[in-house]
Structure formats: structure tokens, C-alpha cells
Image (cartoon, rainbow, N blue to C red):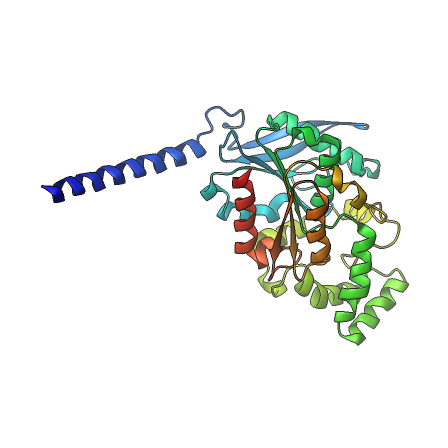
Length: 338
């Protein structure tokens, strides 16, 4: 008798849990109430700029009314393609998220006019995207990586009333500090003769020389950008880098990932003293082998009002690939606590 009751209870529980899981999964992929159902989540958004109206591309994945993450890619001028690793983690955690190619990048319009490549204009663009996607303080989280981290910080300093949370991934709050770290810490880690050759090309401003680029790609990128053999870099990363808008990158970042050089727009950017104005829950992420000082990214989490830090011990600048489990599990844990 008792065995029958226990068996019936177990079966009922199993069916109940199965039904609950099916309902959750069904709800997550239910796009019936979205205006992008017809296009599979794709939505092109018109953006007003000082030079006219242009279109930017976004794509929605999932359905969660209380948790919506907008992904801000780096570069500047790369594409959202390298965020595709999120597809292996976010759906299972029922996180709604949005791919988004900033103006001049990827599937978005490219006006090819450097007058548009200004930090404040990009911030205004993000705000227009937020409005068009219907995101608000009850659900809106920004995840900005690299240059996207700069953009996320700037957005939070102007529009944090619309945010539920903020994630600054693999980005410090000071470009001068980033340059100093590259020159004084990472540079000397290179073989002396290699560093000497790299410096000789930089002194001449010969940043597009095949030899210079080859040395950076062989000795610097596999150590500090993505810690894999270049031949084994994931396809999303290769596509994002292949499709980079180089004139945009050159204008804002300069001609090298080995620090910011020349007259790049971001050369003197520094928001360290303003971080205490950010009141929304904030996660900073740093990799041990990053192009930027992981200690500086940890310190940022203490300068904002409600900060926490995610350390990727095996990670570099692309920690979402070379320390993937740590990265995504940490991001998901932060999002769930919101």
C-alpha cells in the first residue's frame, strides 16, 4: 500500500516538474507578444544623429520580462558576433538578451563619416536603442566588453535611472592607466628582441607594416587577447575581427591593440573619479592575462556604490572564451541576484 502511494507521489512529482520545465522553456521561446517575431528576433532601429537618420541592427533571444541584457561589443568597430558564446549559457538560465551592432559596425549602417565617431553620440545611440526595445529599470542590464565597457560606463553616468544592473567586462576606467600597464608590465614580458623590434616600428609610426602586425599577432595576441593558438580561435571571434570597421577603430582606438597610441580619440579618456556616481548594482570582470590590469578592474568594483568583481584566473581580454565557465557562470550568478 505504502509502496503504491510513494510510487504515485513520485510519478506525480515527476510529471509536475516536467510540466513546469516545459512551461518555462515554452515561455522563454514564446515570441508571440514581440514585434520581431516575424523576423526571428531581428529588429532594425532608426537612430537620429547630427548627420541624419541611420539604422542599427539588433536581435533578440529569449523572453524574460524581468531580465533583459543588451550586449555592447568592443573594438570600437568590431561586431556583436563574438558574443555568440552566450548562446551556450544564457538560454539555459532563462536570460533574455540582445545582440546589437553599433552604428558603423557589422549589420548596421556605416555612414563612413568620422564626425559620428564620438563617445557622447554613441551613448545617445544606446539610449535610442533602449527606448526602441522597450527596456527599463525593472529589467534592463548593460553588458559592455572592452570598448563596450567604456560605452557602458558612459551610459550609466548619464542614464543610470533606466538601468537595473551594469556589467563592465575586461575594461578599466582609465585609458592612460591601460597604456601604462601595456608599456610597463606587459611589454617587458615579451622576448627582448621582439619588444625591441616592435618599438622600432612604433617609433616610425609604421603600424601597418606586415612584420609589425605579424609580431603583435604571434607574440602579444595569444598571450593577452585570446589565449589560444590563432589557428584555433573560435569562428565568432574570427568573424568579428575580420569584419571590423578599421577607420572607426583607427579614429578612436588607434592603430594597435598594444595600448592606445597616436592621436586616438580615447587616448586621454578617464572616468575613475566619476565611478562613485554609479549607484546601480555593478559587476566588473577582469582576466589574469588581460591587456588591462586585473587589479585595476577589481578596484573599480570598490569605487562604484554597489560593486562586485569577477576574476577569471585563466582569462585574457576575451575571457568569455579562454575562461568561459568562470565568465558565464559568474555573469549569470550576478544577473540572478538582481
